[in-house]
Image (cartoon, rainbow, N blue to C red):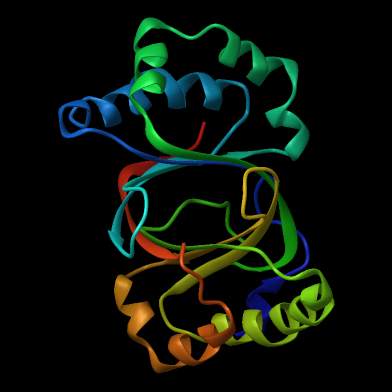
Length: 214
């Protein structure tokens, strides 16, 4: 299954990731706010897919929302910045209600594990956020490219593995593992391959809003 390793991104190469917590009283309206106020205008300017997830394993923020942009530059261009500068009342309110927010703007760093089909977020997502010591960057990149990705490509239930480097937000490295089922995390090969990719900010998420594209 190593043919699933691709040197060219199958989707956009910009990523906006927002990790937040919300007080219990603020949670019921959160997904309607995303589906009605946030996703449509961003899809209209060419973003997609976009999806929102609930954390189901690990510690950290309960909610994760992801937007894929055509490129990193699109996250700084006039169309998107115009949306950010013209927040509606519900948009402004929810941004005040976010707790413990971590916001990342990041760029795709290949290669990736994927299929040739247009990118849609799978039902489950395992996320790693981490830094690599400066003197280990080269050896880590070699291991990730030559060992980790081929190993992940062989594990049933792993749909894709993509790495991003943050230009806003810390830690810098973000790896998104898309899974058809959380059972992929129980595979012996998954546990073996991930020995060098364990961190305190890792966690499993289940998709709460369908992955949508324009």
